[in-house]
Image (cartoon, rainbow over all chains, first blue to last red; front, side, top):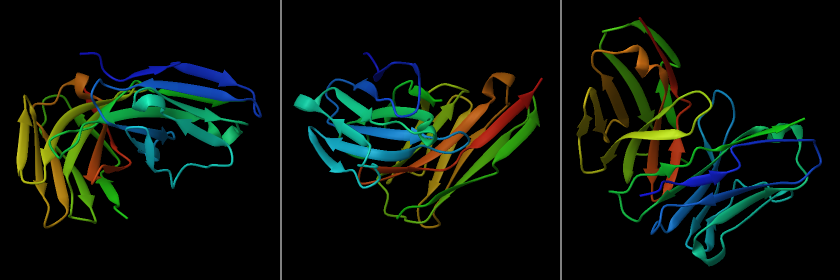
Amino acid sequence: EAGVVQSPRYKIIEKKQPVAFWCNPISGHNTLYWYRQNLGQGPELLIRYENEEAVDDSQLPKDRFSAERLKGVDSTLKIQPAELGDSAVYLCASSGRGEEYGYTFGSGTRLTVV
Amino acid sequence: KQEVTQIPAALSVPEGENLVLNCSFTDSAIYNLQWFRQDPGKGLTSLLLIQSSQREQTSGRLNASLDKSSGRSTLYIAASQPGDSATYLCAVNNNNDMRFGAGTRLTVKP
């Protein structure tokens, strides 16, 4: 079984430029999450999807961040325009329903804004 | 809002020692708790998942316990090896809302 797949693995952009990250969750996992992890800290939730519906986006900076999950499978996270403070690792995770399901994370995208 | 705290923030031990990592959380109404390992520059690898009805889980040299009433979990690593060096993250799941601690950075010296 393939795990959670993310791309790109690394991205370096200049400030004010747009950037997009892509995530393909584990097949059959209805719930998809985007997290941001700053150096030396634990991941923090940006947005959670149940199928194609964003059920928790309270921590997503909506002035510059957007996300979509078309057809309830793949998801993209976009930043436009990027700021220096957006430099971080962006992690995607997916899970099934029920307490017996844990989260499976992708390898993450390391974003550097210069 | 669930808050998760991990102590210590960093730990250095000689090879072969047994060690315990601690995790505490404020809201005991949890679905499950998960321990992850993160190597530098890498994603999170799941180590153990403890459901709310369980008290502990074991995998090889790892044993994780859960005490919901006191809001605590521990990760026990037996006979530590240099390859165990990594950051260990505790994550608490309340109804598909998972919150993380800041992690414990473990170094096992040969």
